[in-house]
Length: 126
Image 1 (cartoon, rainbow, N blue to C red):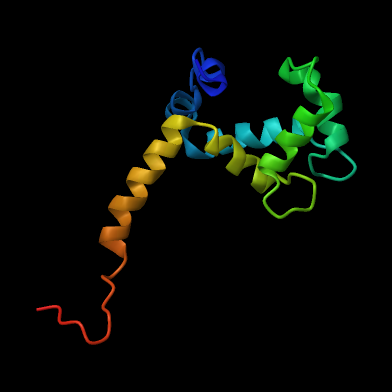
Image 2: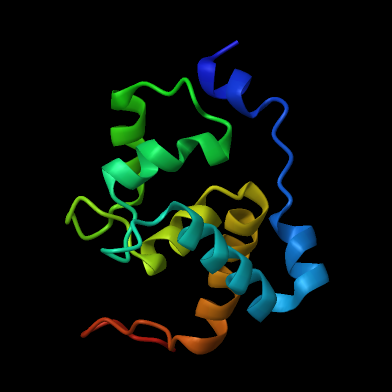
């Protein structure tokens, strides 16, 4: 069994049920609460240091420094070595297999409805 399979074998994605129970705004509010638990209160972002200190809240008291750095890199979309609230919400949603599957289906359905077809010059559409 591959490591990724072992890690996700017992994973239960609770985000869809949270969205149903809380609604979209309530769910985003809970993500923001999670962000505030992990952030550096002075800087307003999740830093390496705040993640290391607060990793106990995640039940990850035995995490190695390189694992913490890897988590930070995974969520740091603008390469500033921190995770802001927007990046955190994106990261959390990316970690939900159900939300990602649903977003891909929505994207394909809506792109065919919303986006006009691409017309290449010199190609007949008739």
